[in-house]
Length: 64
Length: 416
Image (cartoon, rainbow over all chains, first blue to last red; front, side, top):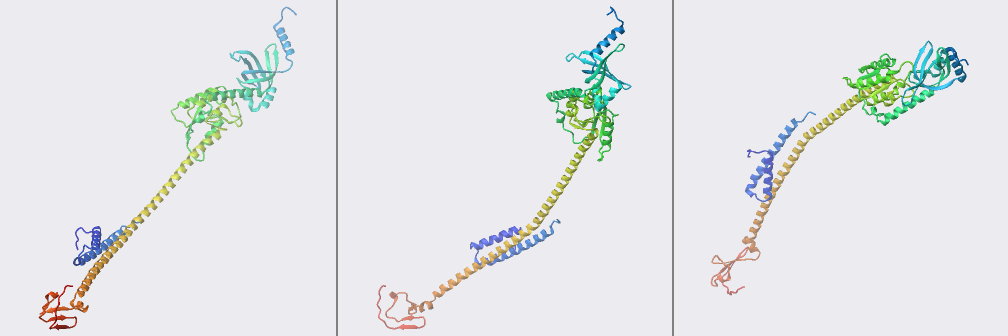
């Protein structure tokens, strides 16, 4: 999994790109499993980022 | 009649002539030039002035003896000082008496107060009209009374009971207000009243102390002469004063010119003190009310801001979670779409492979032979056309399930 410059937004954008490529038949059959594996990694990454952000937001709750 | 008379004879003759012609009392209209009370008797100088030149055109000594004076005092009551005074125009009933030694004298038996009052009223109305014509009548009332009366200039006699009442009320006010009260001495009755009051109004106006108002105080004791305040000069001085003037001249029924022109007229010095205290109390109440309103508004504003902040805080706390939920949902949808799309691609490829298989099967020789086709061979070579058949050699015909060898045959070739 590529880690360079990866954040939630770039990961989400790449996921969207993979979906578009699949929808437009740009992906060959041999490449399909690679794309699917990448999509799974990106999805896991995005979910982890969401959990991290949620935890941070929870800690930042103001005492009103 | 002898050719000459003694002085006594002359005067006795005059007395008889007068007595003969003035056997009854007569009413006269005149002005009192001088008046003096001595041991219960009153001695007066009565005069008449020319209306235009004001020169004395008639004069006579007058007297009110003890008993008639008692009668007149009872009749006039409190009005007596304002009628029996120097400068007063009066209507008197009396006998003209002549004494050989002391000369002629008008012995007064009665006074008609209505005449004097009428004249005074006429004079007062004339002054009022003049002040109105000159635009002075309402001028002092057009000044704004300060909301707080703390520096007060008093025009009065510090020995007057009214002044003492006023000071007592001011100093003993229930609110504990501290006020600077300065007295400017002035005669409050008699001939000097007009001059003193006018001078002190001017002096207060020029004073270094910036007073909030001027109070003219009188009253207390017996009701005495008020006509001094029916003065054009006092009215003008009050009207032109830069400070609001309050009067407590001490009367119950009629107003005088000073009262009418003043910013505010109270019946007594005590009432005037109450008015000042009340004015300050109203201001204090207003200030307290404003303070209370400011406090309430501040509380309301704080509460509103606190509520808004709380709401904002809650929203700020909730919105990220909403967004995170949305993102999570979005990721799940996206990944599901990718999975679906992958499956669809796989299915598509699978279907394509299945199609290839069907086509391949369709092209298998056995499949074709079952449909009634046969393979023709001659010497193990496939015969694709009748042209290539050699009629001298045997041919093999392969069916889907068996083989026929044809040894001899008659060959005829024709085009389809």
